[in-house]
Image 1 (cartoon, rainbow, N blue to C red):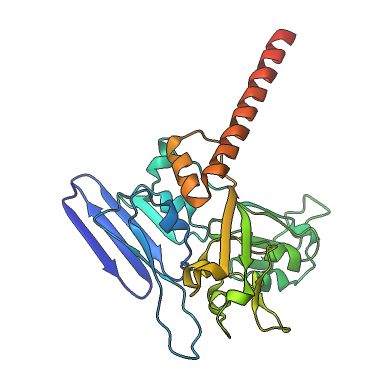
Image 2 (tube, rainbow, N blue to C red; image 1 turned 180 degrees about the vertical axis):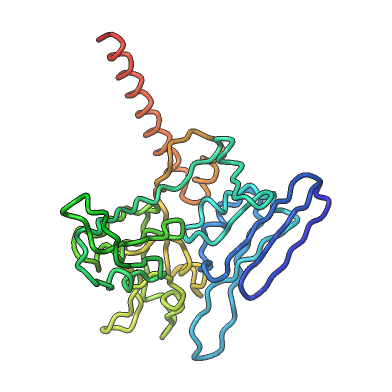
Length: 299
């Protein structure tokens, strides 16, 4: 049991702490980065994280759902830290970023596959920076070292730890500058006939520009799956449960075989998707074993 347990909240952050004799556990939720999505609430094995819908007045835009964490249930495992698409949660021990479930090899890490080729970016081109809906891209002048005739005059920095891999930058930047692969895959479907008249709550809270859009034809909201990251911020505020369907089918992660991960994956997706991953993992292991055996015989 902790010697001291505290929970503090400000406009900027929610902080939980365990103070032990030799260790100090700390969890910080950055409210500016948090979008009120469903990922951490579904992933938490202790059911310590809850979402609360925020009230709104008539004519007011919807507000993102508020995340709250029960200090009595949280054990600072770091699963919410690992899986937050927006990097809004950080878990540390004695001031260092520590993820015990990763260190113990019982949990994988997300693969944020973001590739940048600044040599294909025109000089003084700032649209890449402006394209990111989360302001995670910075474009600056590069300092050439004179070793390559094809050196880029532009430097592009991406804060990958906060990037949900929506691919907006890939489509809005010049061809070949950005290449982004999603780590959350799924399906989103909106039934406009079930949406309340004039309701745009899902669109109001969606953090990704272009993932949802308002149709000029019927003034209803529709999804654009090219940019959707299936985080569930929209689902969390939808006033009619049947109006918006969201299903996650796959998560791109580092290789791992773990019961802890399988249970988490089931909560985020479905038992069917877990079975598919287990079969795929088994097939890869069998293939690797055969290739090693053939290589051994060839020697």
